[in-house]
Image (cartoon, rainbow, N blue to C red; front, side):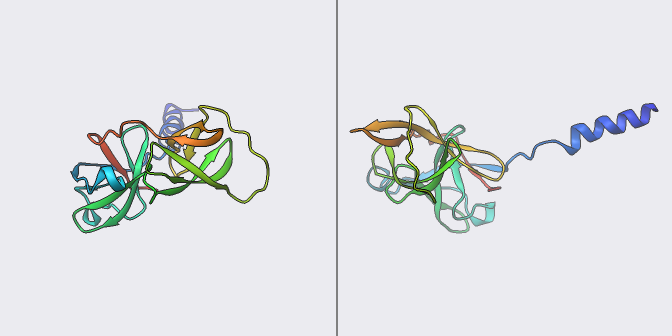
Length: 166
């Protein structure tokens, strides 16, 4: 084996198997369209920046919301706690449908495609599966013995990014 072939092998290991990193763009809030009422806000990027309806908006760690409507230069974001928000989530490799409630939690509408009994545990992580990265929506808690997904208490609107590659 020559030095060149060792180098080629190492190059392949480091470059051919490198994980795909999702593309995100930084955005700023330019208006909160009644954030206290309907939990939506406006960001300063739109179609011309690559943003599209359905893209996830992240605060660095957690899902804050999704793009609901769009123009060339800005977009409206519906937050995860809004009753306009709904999504498919995964808990212990099982799919569920959740919806916002205009409170600090999301409720379960149903389990997707099954009739099995499910036993949730407090603080189980609730994940949104994505092509390149799993997104954290929140954690399980119980209100009046009913399972709910607790969203982050304070939305961090100062460090938002839109996930483009989804």
